[in-house]
Length: 189
Image (cartoon, rainbow, N blue to C red; front, side, top):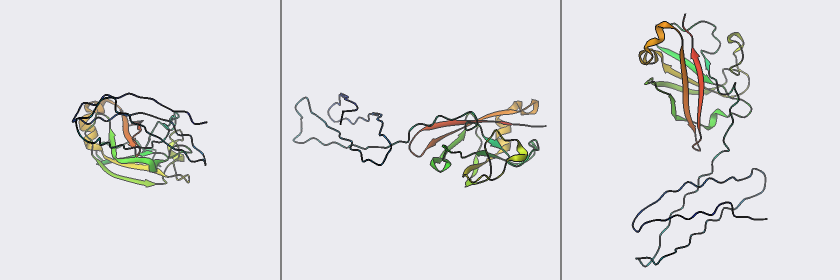
């Protein structure tokens, strides 16, 4: 039973271009699916032909990050507080049964509100989930995204670091345009 998913009327002025996002859901499965786009011109055109460009982007279904998936692992495998004199800090977004780090667009990764440079990004199996104690952080058979940031730039942005810990939010987009954030705490002695 084929039912139209969305009917949308868009007014476009002559000589103008308009982009319109129309979200649709395409069920997963082995069946094939057809997306039909029908355009109807309601008024006479001032030119002898109409030209249309339609770009369809298939997006992943949005993830619902669990509490443990939404946290990052700081300095995996180390139980030591972060030394403020070190130049870099490693932050890991741990892969899980439903979070595939290969879908993260590394070019969009940033720390919200900080001007810290991302020095290196590497997909590697280095960590378990964020709910494991530091001494249990090790490879678990799933790919993780290891991010190395300039710690001195983080400290410069967060002048209150000398009084305690720094709360960070890592922002990124997936390769299909979905936006996610993960949170972590930099612990200082």
